[in-house]
Structures are given as structure tokens and as C-alpha cells.
Length: 281
Image (cartoon, rainbow, N blue to C red; front, side):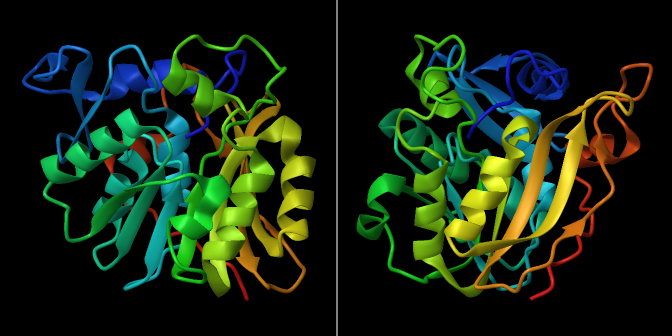
């Protein structure tokens, strides 16, 4: 549930929020006045999110489209927030079972309501739990895949938001990268896959930490806001117990020169499933 740095040219949260479909022609209030009811994929997916807290960013969409998912697999989203990544994966993949794990009680409860709102109870379940005590949340080696959008910032880096949801999502306060990787190693079956989105500036930290956690990086894609600027994010997928050797994919460009979305990102926002290449084992 991490978000791109505020100084990143991607500006994930603000730009995507402008492109989320309004419900009934305008941004609707939910029965709880502190929430908004929003939609994705031309209204196919609806979800509640805090008006002032953590909100869906473009990062989640990029990650959901990047991860390799096979039919009938079980996938877990660590730090699921409002449960939007499980909703997106359930929409993109017909025969999967998805679990979202969230530490913050209010967000976990909202994620459960979002699952019910979309009638996805048979495909998606939400569990409240702490990645730092993952053995109390799920059995070992019980999932085929893990997705994770962990907080990018160290506790001493940048301005810390007074809002609990934003603070935990952005800063390594309730779990750092090592905690999320350790949880993934615990949950993944041998040869299971883990996909993450992370700050490009900390790409070396990510790759070295994945290898240390026995999740061998196999696919990597840099994300650039524009074609002529440095990467701001990196998408990486690794395999637990995999062989060494990584495939570096073509860069993902968010915006065209006119600041409209690139064709690929526009397709992702519209909910079109893009066939991703599975990592070699």
C-alpha cells in the first residue's frame, strides 16, 4: 500500500484520483460521510475509500497488471489497504483465490465492505493481521503468489503525515521491506512468485533484500513518468528458490508528451487485461 514519493513526477495518487470514474455522474458520498464511493473499469469495480486518508494510487494498478497469475492459483496481497488490489486481480483473472492482509482495523473493515460491495466473497477474503507476525495470520507455504506495495520511505525520510492511514502506507513505521519479504517467504510455496512495486531509487536495496530472503528476482521493469526522465518506480517479480538470472523488460512510460496517459497505462485504467510473461523457473 506504499505510494510514490510526493516529489515523483508520476504523481500517482492525484492523477489517478482524477481518472477514477464518478458514481452517478459525480463523486458520491458513502453512507459514512468520511468515505467516498468510487469506481474503476467503467463502473465494473466500486470501492469505498477514506476521504482524507489513504487513497488508491496508480501504483496499485501497475502492480496488479504486472504480476504473473495462473488459473486456480492462490494469491495474497500484503498490506492490502482498502482491498483494491484483490478486487482488481479478481476482475482480471477469473479462476483465482485472493486474500488481502491488512494491519489497520479501519482499513481492513473497509476492505471487507468493498469485497461485499462487488459480490466477490467467493473469490476474495480479507484478514486482519500484521506481516511482522505472519505465522498468526496464515499457515506456511499456503500461497502460490504474493503481491506487495510496501511503504517506500524510511521513518526519518520526508514529511510524516499526521493521518494514520497515509503515515503507515508511506513510511516504514509498521513494517519495513525486510518484514514484508520475510512474510512472503513464509507464505509462499517453493517456486511461488512475489511481485512488488518500489521506489526506483531503492532498487538495489530491493533486489539485494529479495535475494537475501530467498526470493530470486526474475523479471524487472522500470517505470518512468515520461520517456525522457529518470525512472521513479520499479516493478520486480521473483521466485522463491528460483535460479539466478533476470529478464529486464522494456520500460513502462506513464504519460505521453501531451501529459495524457500512454496507451498501455490507459488500457490498464480501463481494466483491459494485458498478458504478462511469467517468470522462468
